[in-house]
Length: 465
Image (cartoon, rainbow, N blue to C red; front, side, top):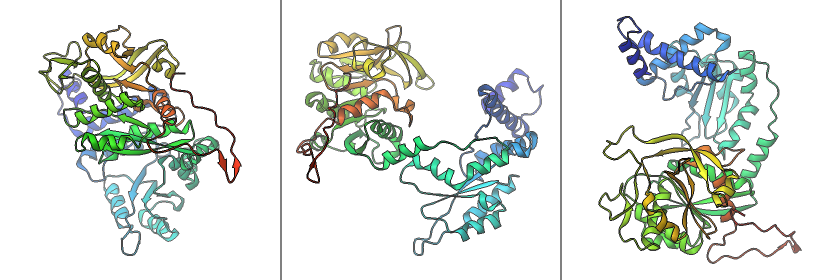
């Protein structure tokens, strides 16, 4: 926003006038909101102003949306304020003062919220809702309780039950119909009551903060729904755990995922994970950096290329199987990544092509380093083939181990294209294969339930069949 305003000033769009937050920055914000609406021909545009009321960074945005309400009419704008109702540990009493203070601060910016969504870990009594309605000057049915749910996918159902959608319809004078949420309820029910489970290891250096891999774990969870299964995540720190400790954990899981990352820390642990999967037949899914680790592992331990590495980790490696993309050499880091949606051509007959059931796909990227094409023949001799490349054939996008149940590494981030009603094909096939793996020391349950033989379950085909 600021960059666009400065560029306009340099072009002379403001005729030499002094640039100010109001009106220049606020006008730019409003223009972008209108552009989003016009570009998509939207009936309703949802704008989230992040941060906390009172943050200096958000003041221009609050002023912009205040002005928009005045310009396009009060019945065309609805302000929803999300607040936290903290509970005292000793008594469990919910305190409304932070909400009252937040609304007071918001009013000082010229905004009176129409709806207040109250986040809490506990049920919100009616008297608390009445208190918020009275002191924050909102309708009683506009105080929306939002207690912590067991899964985020319950939230749309909770919002519908609260009546907030009907309130929004009335305020904005929308002619909406009663939504059909049966499929969504079924999705939530299957999430909460899976028929089976799969232990999946997530190998990385940020595993202490599980949210660092939220997109990955959610993609695996959604993929498991296809098979009425739920992943149980085992977090493996690739930086602090020894190879022996990691392998002991790997013996208890049914699949291993190595998500994206940067830098040299924890890379050797990720290489251990790739080697374990390659040698034992355990399903492996490497995302971005996870592909790089798999390539390094095969180069070292299968191709015999001693010292093979990524030039990101070891610029002096005798075998840089991972290197900078063409045109990146001599370029300073910053603003030079391969970003966004790029096409990928799939190799017919490969597991990747079978998973996608397509010849050409588009995936989202964020990287500077790529597989070094000079080493593709040596890797292919050991079964690691490029099953997805850029349309011009210059960049490797997907590699997989021929003859392995599922050993796939991708240069992109498929987790960003997975959706609740459409899980990503690669995550789906990874879960499919993992569910057919028996961890060490376990056995399949006998086909009896309460003394009665259970119906035979269809055998799971391996990924790609």
